[in-house]
Length: 98
Image (cartoon, rainbow, N blue to C red):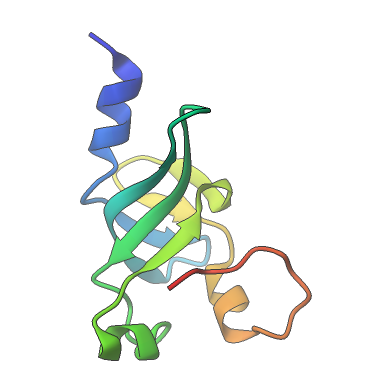
């Protein structure tokens, strides 16, 4: 049995929280790089309306870079997404894609 394949599909449906314990959303799909066989991002739905009001109102999701993921267990923990979303003027190359 291919453990990597099983792990990738098991990410769908998991809740995502920031390191600060703030609910961000739920994994609906994955952004994959087929040629490199890597996960590039998590496509989130069921978003926290306080963080993503515009996207929630438009019925859209967001994709967070997989490099933000800090741990995967019963839930997925990602880096300080709250600060990055609330401070869009910060000079940072990481962006959330709607």
